[in-house]
Every structure is written in structure tokens, then in C-alpha cells.
Length: 275
Length: 266
Image 1 (spheres, one colour):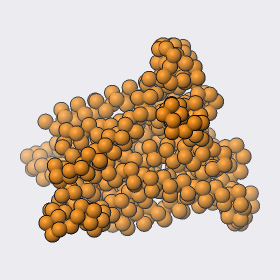
Image 2 (image 1 turned 120 degrees about the vertical axis):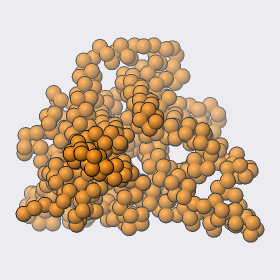
Image 3 (image 1 turned 180 degrees about the horizontal axis):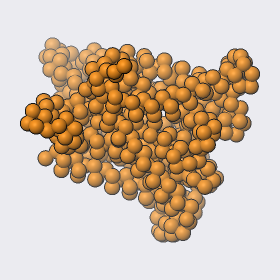
């Protein structure tokens, strides 16, 4: 049997992914319905228990809040980046890339120190009289949100710039000529035209946030644990493979479903960052 | 009007101010860590009471930090090499191949990028426990290559899509063998893509924490695992010194990339 032309180059990649990605993940799923005994008891335990339900709720809450804040912060920046003079834009791009490339743990560590009770931010807030005692900025939802928005911003800004640059400025000039106020032009033209970019970027940030481990584990508290951390804990400390695998499978299904939705929104190449 | 930078009026001032604040927000942690690493306070007080190099001395006096950094560099270099080699072959097939299911295969190869890392981490951890590859360099390189492969394929495939195949065909008409034409015409033309692939794969491995936390053994741990351990035990300024060196490395990589791109493009 001859392979179709040009397919041979894929063999090393497919072997690697098949053997060390597909097989291990499938084995994990199998484990979720066989460990410690065959059946769906692991899923029943996860979905029926209030403690785990809280973790699921928390995970979605954090991902949702992070996505909303990221979109709100990223939009004006992407807007400016799309139209500002090239020299200014390249400085801003440099800053975004630098923060994106800086080691993830380094950035999270910086926020751990900055947000402490006695950290710079609390001291500045007290010094300026905004508050008279340190605010709880870390080991809670606030800390996770600040840290995660910080990590996710570039992933939202960069694709949005592309969407905004693709909008023809003439449409807005036409709106102004026809007497539309800036607010009306924004609400009825600019925003609707950039909505596909916002939806795609927002969905990506949401999906990434759902499965995030490092930042929530370091900036979050014990009362608002997220799913990824719970999975790691079940495997590493509790050695409960059945429950851990089942939780991982739920996370995987939700992620893949949202990813499929994103593919339908923007097409496969752009969803994978190809654009 | 809204997309015309010079005609935004007061809105421009407002949006630029906001953008400047966000830029400051993005820079703040990076600058802060570097300043902190020279501060003399063990309790990370800021501004520090004085300036010192002692955290760097402590860092370099501790062989476990150096060893972790060397382990990370070795694993990241091997990962970049393997990911670029495998990714290059795969990109040719994905861009040039004429076969059914190409889009599905492309999707499959890029899945490691979207699957939550923690799921892959526990899956490969269990798998390697059985194979006896946990805590080995081979295990690390394989797992990191799976994660780095999408970051290698995307820039190479993009570069290859932008390359006019008729130039390669012309070389063959002029007497070059297909392999010669690829090595001497096509590869040099897509070198920016290959170079980006190498940098991205290196960074994907160098920065990777979650898989590494599961995979690490007492005798083999990467730099992120070492930092992770220190972060969970105490927030010593030695971490700031190690982190500052990482920031310096990132800056150096950015400068090299920018310079090489400029040189390669002209």
C-alpha cells in the first residue's frame, strides 16, 4: 500500500503525538471509569458532592470575571494600537511582548510580593489615604483576578488589533458625515464590527483561564480553589487517581467543547493562533 | 473618525492615558522584581533600606540553583531541536500534501496547545511511571516536545505558505535534485519561520511548570520547579535575583530576535 503523496513527513509528528499525547490521555480517561472499580462512581462522587461543586462553581466564576475584565481593559489598548503612529505602536508592542515572554513564575512572584498585606500597593493606598488599613488583595478572588488578567491581556490585545485594523475607517467617516455622534458611531459601527474579534479572544481567554494552574495556586486562597489545582492535589497528595482522572476528563470535555465553538466562530487557522 | 488617530480629539487623550496606564501595569512586575533583587531587605520591603548584591551572591553560592538552570537549558535546547525537526517535516506535509483529512491532522497536532496542561501533566506522569521515564531527561524532553510542537509548526507552516513554490520548481528545472532544491532554496527562504519556531519551542520548555512539577525527581529538577518550590516555602529575595536573571535572558532573546529578523529580512 502506498501512502498518499506528501503524507510521510507527518509520520514523526503523528507518532510523537499519538504515543505520548493521545495514548496517555485515553489511558487517563479509562482510569476514571475503572479506578478503583469499574463504573461511574467517580463522576457521581464529583458531581454529587458540595465541596467539589464549589470548586467547579469557583472555576467558572474566576474564568468569567477574568474574561470580562480582560476584554474591558484590552479593547481600548488594542484600539489605540491599531491606529497610533508606527513608532509609538512598536514601543507598546515591545512592552506587551516583554511581559508575555517574561517567565510566568517571575510575574506571579512579583504579584505575590506587590499584593501582600505589607506590599507596595497596600502601602501606597494607605499613604494616599484611599484606605486606612491594608486591603486583602491576595489569597482571594481579587488576587487571582489581578494576576490572571495580567497574564491574559496580551492574548486578548494582539488578536483584537488584527480585527480592528481590518475595519475600513471609511465606514466610520461615512457615519460621521451622516451626522452620527461619536458615541452612536462607536455603539452602532465600531463595536459591532469588532465583536467577532472580542468573542473569539474572550472565548480563548475563558478557556485558558478554566484550566489555569500556576497563578490561581499561588495568588488564590484555600477557600476559592480552582479545578486544575484540585486535580493536581488529588493526584499528587491524595493519590486518588480515579477521582483525579474523572475531574480531568470533565475539564477536558468542557475545554474541547468551548474550543470547538471558537473554531466555528473564527475558523481553524485563526483559532490556533495562525493569524 | 473613531479610527482616525489625528481626529479623535479629547477621546485620544483619554484613550492614550488609559493605554499608558495599561502599559505601566504590564511593565510594573518586571521592573519591580529587578529593583527588589538589589534591595537589602530580607522581608521584601519597598523601597528597600539599602542596595546590595548579596542575593546574587547567595544565588551563585548555591549549586542547586545553577544545576536547575543548566538542567532547564539542556532540556529546552533538546526540546527546541526535536520540535523544529519534527515540526519542519510535519509543516511540509501540512502545507504541501494533497490528502484527505489534512485539516483534521493539523488540528490533532495543535491540540496540545489548547488542552489544559494539568490534564496532559497527570496523563503523561501516569504513563511515564509505567515506562520508567519519570524524572529522566528523556521523559522531560518528550513531554516538552509534545507541548512545544504547535509552537514550532505554526511559524514554519506560515512561512512555508508564504513561500512561492515555483522558485523551488525552477531550481529543479535547472538541474537540482528535489532534496537539493529544498535544502538550498526553500529552507533558507523560510529561515525566519524556522528561527521563530526554535525560540518559541525553547521558551515553551524553559518556562514550563506544570508538567515539570509532576515529572521532577529529587535528582532532576528544572529551574521553574526550583522556583515553584521556593515560592511555596518562603518568599526569599534570592528568587528575585534568579527571576531578574530570567528577565535579562528574555530581554537578550528579544533583542537577538529583533536584530536577526532585521538582518534576515534585508
